[in-house]
Length: 93
Image (cartoon, rainbow, N blue to C red; front, side):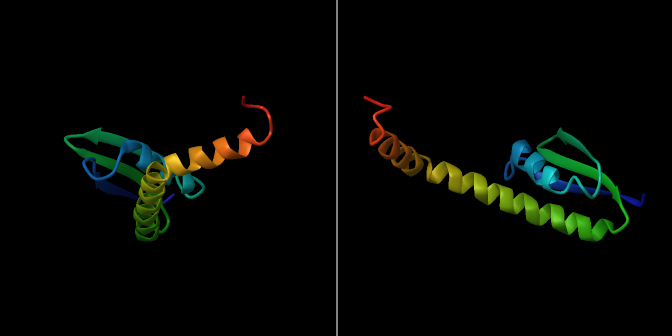
């Protein structure tokens, strides 16, 4: 398929879940092997354009990490909005 390439992420900066979400978004371009040891998450893959895919994976990990951060920061606001929306329906008393 192409050249085998590895991309490593610091597990103190990015969670394994974040890396997995990012790889799912790139799963149409390759299959991935993930290992986690010694504070590092390593993703190994083969691709025709390994540098391009590695860049895409890095960008996607950053994007997924930001989504996770925003989700945590806005959780209370979302809960209040949903509670208010359902309180007007008579479903919650």
